[in-house]
Length: 195
Image 1 (cartoon, rainbow, N blue to C red):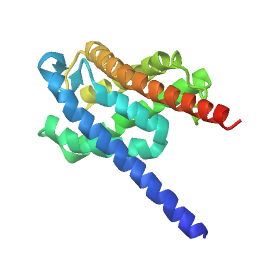
Image 2 (spheres, rainbow, N blue to C red):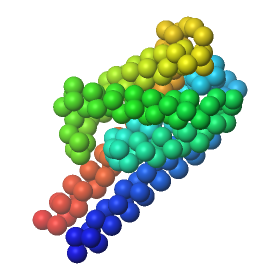
Image 3 (cartoon, rainbow, N blue to C red):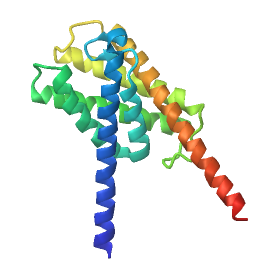
Image 4 (cartoon, one colour):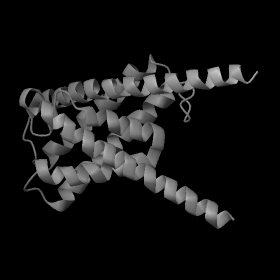
């Protein structure tokens, strides 16, 4: 019986990773439509919705969501970082996903948000988003410079990445908050109806 439960849990976790990766990949493709007017420089977009998918995936599915986004980002990176070695692409994807995870964990801890998100409020989202995008923007751009993917302008590139990630994340996190509020409202109504 325990083995069946364990297999079911593993299947659910794998499904979460696939859903997170699939959502990241699809939203990235959608975001490419903004490139003609929102692409700041190679790897930096001023409206980057996939950053929000990564935030949501890590908030909701934790490590499994991060794994899915990491795999999707790795696959996509071969397209927009042509000519880089496999280790650079994998390390970039790992740093990007890890920096986002770190930012979310720090934001949740600072604001006292429970891991089940039951006390997540709309007011928390911009603060958590700012913490996460700041960490991500500076860490990723420092990596770009350290391996020669970019040569300078750490602060300018990091701030541009923060702006695009912040805007994209805020849009997606606002959608998540709306869904959570809707679900909570439906649960309350159901509880009232059963009384």
